[in-house]
Length: 96
Image 1 (tube, rainbow, N blue to C red):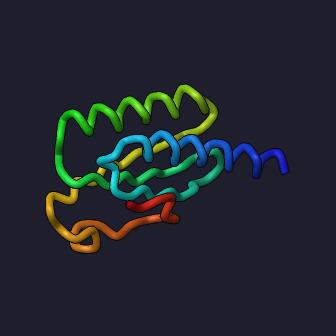
Image 2 (cartoon, helix red, strand yellow; image 1 turned 90 degrees about the horizontal axis):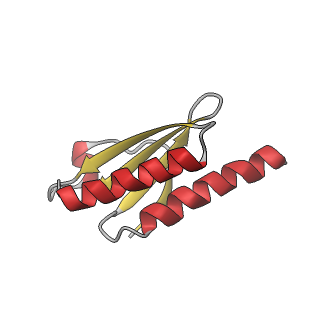
């Protein structure tokens, strides 16, 4: 039960931190082996300011949970439909 609660805490932080960036459209999360997570972050365009915000959040999450291996993928939609550029992996954490 403690492991389950820990995972929920980690996912809650990922959701809250990335949701705080208004430009983030969607986030997908998938669990890998052992203590690994893949996080796919969907943003509308390749914007340096938004990219800096997402990278800062990545650093915060990695510092908060040093025992986790977290792999972040940032996908720039650039006006395209999501399914035209990538097959989302994992579970939808949130969408706007």
